[in-house]
Amino acid sequence: MTQRKRCPRPNLGALLTAEVNEEMVAQALDAARETPDGFREPVVRHLLEVALTQIWKRIEAQPKSYIMSRNEFAVFNFFQFLDLTPRQAIMAMTARANYWSYGSDAGKRKRDSV
Image 1 (cartoon, rainbow, N blue to C red):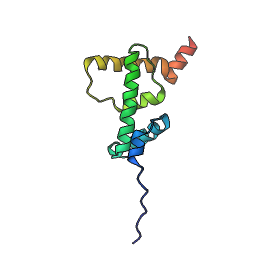
Image 2 (spheres, helix red, strand yellow):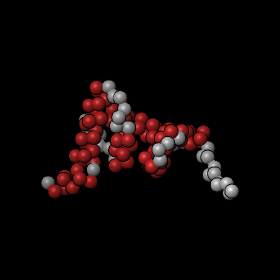
Image 3 (cartoon, rainbow, N blue to C red):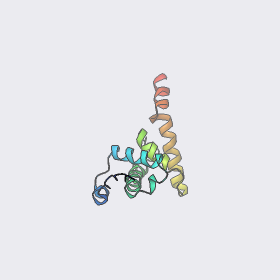
Image 4 (cartoon, one colour):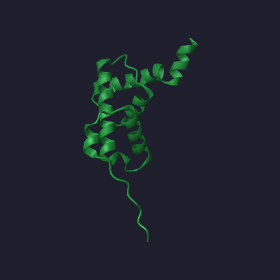
């Protein structure tokens, strides 16, 4: 019986203190979506939670006008079932509406045709 080689685990400490960039977040989101236990991986969970915190800070700074990027929207949508305060729920609803009206491809096409 042959044993499968295990991939070396990433240095969790280094990843948890590293600057979170868009590519890392996209990979973490893919891992969380594609595998049943993906979100339970500490690195994946950390990267997505940091990204969500950064997105919320941007939304809170411009609650009526912030337009998320496609990647930000994907992360925000991944966490859509969080318990939110009434104020946060309104900001989340506005942020989603802004994305669909102005940030998404459909919103851009709609604006361009006017």
